Image (spheres, helix red, strand yellow):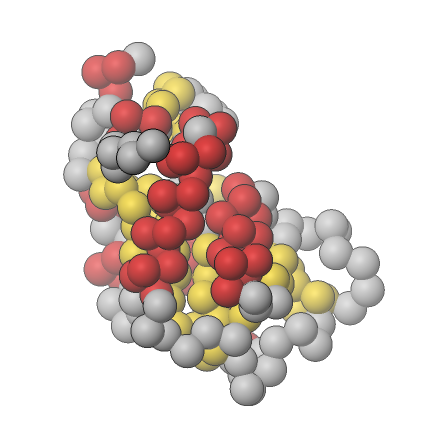
Length: 185
């Protein structure tokens, strides 16, 4: 059976005032619930980054774990988890950052990355530059090199890409304005 390509935009749902009033949450989990769409998404990310030398995949909690683990499995690469505070036992490396509606912190288990590593960072959404910059800083402080960042959604209207011009940032869907998909809700 030959199925046509999935339009990812049709599977992204917007939720107003989540996680707090004034914020629009872009939910991509319908892609994960559709096996064909999920396989296509993983395949599209692999095609984009196939020429990169990648030694490890670093996935950001928690939604980044979904695509990051699939990519690590397909490529046969180690998966490194970038987590929120107090969720990783033992010694950790930490990075605090400012995000669109507050502050955050990422941690990873110490010793998992080093100067021989070329890392692809995977997350669900590229909003402003804060979360991505936090992950990049965390990874590069270990001596590893970031070869790119992969996302399902990019909120272009927040200008995150322009503030991170040195990295290969790739997203499956680009949202040009905050109101672009809001007509549906």
